[in-house]
Image 1 (cartoon, rainbow, N blue to C red):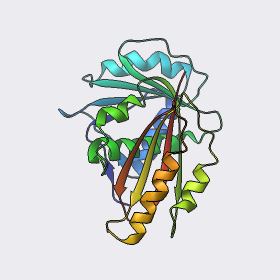
Image 2 (image 1 turned 90 degrees about the horizontal axis):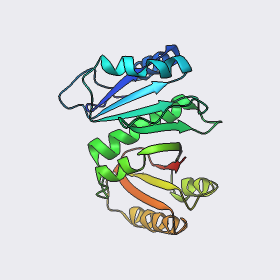
Image 3 (image 1 turned 60 degrees about the horizontal axis):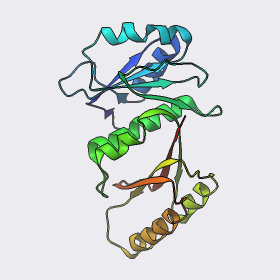
Length: 218
């Protein structure tokens, strides 16, 4: 797989477990920046009370980025209110934390760096993660019919207060198949609760896949 470089993102580990997460990301070809004039976001990974106490120390060692995003690998960790933290994110109890973090980084790359095809605004994506949020992702690939993936996503309970991003990867063509897929996408979007916030994006890829990103305020 081609390396994924996030030019505007810096990964910051605060404890032993978060160091292992960052090293694993690198081993799988996912890299942030150490320091750069283009840095937009510090992603600070916290796995323990010791790591939480270490946040000010690790942040002081670097030139501050525009936004600081705290990711808690343990949802029970308490992170005090701090005006300098743009986001404090955690995952549901049964989540595969590493997979969730990696998917979040890929979503940042697609929706912030590459933008996709629907014109999703960068600020729209960051609205989904602003503040204190529980987040989750679900991705399903399909071979012949996009409904194969959409039907699996329909099993996820949607919430009125939820904020969602639907990302569809499509192949670069203008065939009848693509037209049919767009109809399925529209029909799925129509099932979301009226009070939910929904963004969506299309991205060209050889891998056909549908991803649902969920963000719930806490």
